[in-house]
Amino acid sequence: MANKLWEKSVEVNKEIDRFTVGRDRELDLYLAKYDVMGSMAHITMLESIGLLQRDELAKLLDEMRKIYQLAERGEFKIEDDVEDVHSQVELMLTRALGELGKKIHSGRSRNDQVLVDLKLFTRDRLRHIVEKVVRLFHELQRQSERYKNILMPGYTHLQVAMPSSFGLWFGAYAESLTDDMLFLQAAYRMANRNPLGSAAGYGSSFPLNRTMTTELLGFGSMNYNVVYAQMGRGKTERNVASALAGVAGTLAKMAFDACLFNSQNFGFVRLPAECTTGSSIMPHKKNPDVFEVMRAKCNKLQGLPAQILLIMNNLPSGYFRDLQVIKELFVPAFDELEDCLDMAIYIVERMEVNEQLLSDPRYDAMFSVEEVNRRVLEGTPFRDAYKQVGLEIEAGNYAPNKNIRHTHEGSIGNLCNEQVAALMQQIVDGFGFEQTRAAEQKLIIG
Image 1 (cartoon, rainbow, N blue to C red):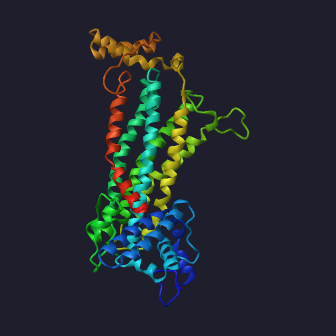
Image 2 (image 1 turned 45 degrees about the vertical axis):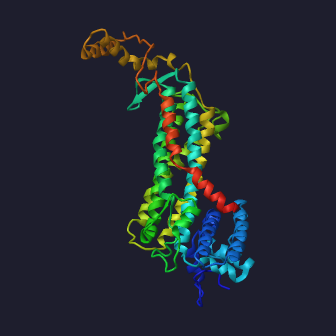
Image 3 (image 1 turned 120 degrees about the vertical axis):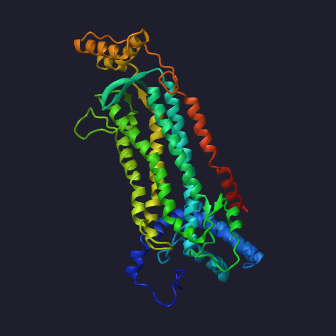
């Protein structure tokens, strides 16, 4: 019995099979439960247009729910001589239900099958990413409030520049995540469109009800044009990867800051002891390896959109096997970013700051602008005040006044954390996760 959906009388060369299948069996395990969900919606629609009997549908759905539970428990396996997840599911149904199992493929192709699997996988994994970004956001805001009155130097050109605060530093990364969330929402909306029914990219002569499968799977809408549904593969992954890269960029920058600020030359923050590693030769070392590995992983993730672009960049319309290679890059990226977010949440929650930092005279000069502004408020023209303070610093006569008062929105004394939190909540509410989850549960439970 052939275990490839397309195999007929000629058996493919084993080396060709190995090369073309690539990592599909391994990566398709990520897609197993989504493949079952897509098939459940598809056969429900097939029954509605008369291609399945009601009792046949009931038997198929019952068996598919068993397969779904296997996948949920991590027990779903793709056998060695089976090409992919689609073949494995159909094989399991055929073993359990005989010829009935072969009826599920009417009106679709593996092309739209893998498309819908990837869409369902992507929107689900994006939901997990969003949840973890929100958790990190709240930890950053909590630390921002905790340390809002503790000043630290701000830098330009890596030179001590002007007063900043730990409240501003933590809060800056929190607000950066709100912008990243906008891109995640756009990526989610693109993933949340139904390609099922586009078949090999040119539709079907069966009277498919694509609106029905769209509703059954909780999609926001469908990819209407069947040719574009197929063209969207690669494009969707590239745009989602760009959204993931945005979050990764924020994490990488924060990781670099944390490594710098944790060093003895800075001494701004102290990382939890259990989050640092030692040296094989230097007994005093406490290395910020977690942040260094996070920085590397996140920088790698920022290269993902370019990798996907280079694979799909010069493909014309229609399906090509090149797209399979994108899956090898795209699917694991979610695990990697979630892992980095978990690490960031853990460390930020436990990070402590040096509250006596400004007792060091090397930071006195950062108050020079404050002194210039004070003299301007007393009536001295700005250029004169600037020159006076500069000459005092050169002569060693400058004495900083460290009592500063900033009041405008987003400044040291007015962080606007509540407004940023409201913005984040507004963006999260715009995803519409509840509608999707409700549709999925109804389909799975019956």
